[in-house]
Length: 462
Image (tube, rainbow, N blue to C red; front, top):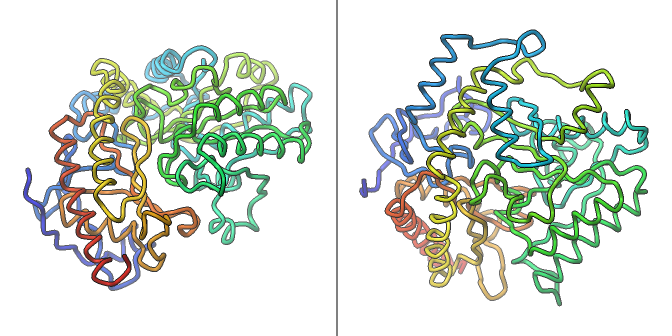
C-alpha cells in the first residue's frame, strides 16, 4: 500500500506503560490493531511499514503462521515447566540448533528472558568460572565508550552511557571503558583504520593500567546498536582485540543481542571475522523475532562443564528455558534457515545501502550511512562539511520518528549519552523484506528526510 497515513493519535492513557514516558496531556502512540509481514496497522486502519523491526527485533516479520502454530501447540502441551525440575524437548532442540548455528566453541546455550538478562548471565558466568579456576582476583569487565548492554544494574554498569551513570551511578560499580572505534567522527589526524588501531591499543593500555590479573572480560557489540548507530570497525580492530584478550587471559564477549540471528547477513556478526572469534556471545531479539521474550548466552562446553563439576552455575530466573519461548525460538530458527534469511539480509542489505547512500549524497542533512546486512543506520547532521550536529534541543531522532508515522514508516530512534556522539536512525526492516519493499521503504524515508530538511532550512538551522 503506497498511500501515506494520516494518523490521529489517541490521548495518552493513564493506565498504560506510556504514562511512564509521556507527560499528562500529550498524545499517545498509534494503537496497534494487527500486524502481518512487514506491515503494522493501527485501530484507525492506517498502515505503517516496519522500517526498524520494532527495536530491531522482529526479524521474521509479523504473523508468521509456523511460529504461531508452534506457540499454540506448546501452550496446549505445557506452557511452563521449571528447568530445575523438568527438561523440555523444545529447550533441548533450541540449544542444539543454536550450538550448530553459532559454531565450534559456542556449544552451550543458557536461555533467559531478554538481552539484559543475557548480559548479566555472561558477566556472572565469567566471574564464577574465574573463581572456580583459581583466578578470583579477576572481576573487572571492560567495555567501550559509548556502549549499551542492557537496562539492569549489572548491564548498565558495563554500558558506556554517561547520562545513565549520572542517574544510576550510585547503584553501580562501574569500571574502565575504552573508546569506540568510530569511522565517521574521527579524531584529528586519524583515518578509520588508524583510529581503530588506537582504540584497540587503548584496550591493552586499560588492561595494563587496571592490572591484567584483575581484568575478567571485555564486552562489545561487533556491529553497533543504538549507542553507536550500526558502527562497523575496520577489520584490523577485531583481530587486534582478539589478540590482546588472548594474550592477557581476558574473556572476549560479543554482545550480539541486536546483530545476531542473521541480521548482518551471517547468523552471527562474528562470522564476518572468523580470525577474531569471541569466547562468549549474547543473543536475544532475533532468536524469537519478537514473538516472545528470549535471551541467550552461548558459551564453550569446557567452561560450562567446569562450573557443572564445581557445583553448578549460580544463576537462574523463573522463566529461563521456558518451553513456550523455546518452542517459538525453534520455529523462528527453522524459518530462518529454510528461507535463507541471512542470505536475504545480505542481498537486501546491499540494495538498501545503495538507496541510503544515494540519499546521503543528495540530502544536506544525512552525513553518514553505516552497518552490515539489514542492520543499517543513517546519521543526521546540520552541516556535512563540518559534521556539526543538529542542535540537541531539536530532538532530531524523535522528530524524524514523528515524520515517519506521517509517511507510513515506523522508525526506531534512541538517543544515548544525550546525543553526545551524534543523532542516528536505525534502518533495519525484517529479514523477510523483498526488493520491492526495500524500494518502498527507501522512497518513504526519502520523503521523511526531505520534510525534515525543509523544516530545518525554514528555521535557519541549515
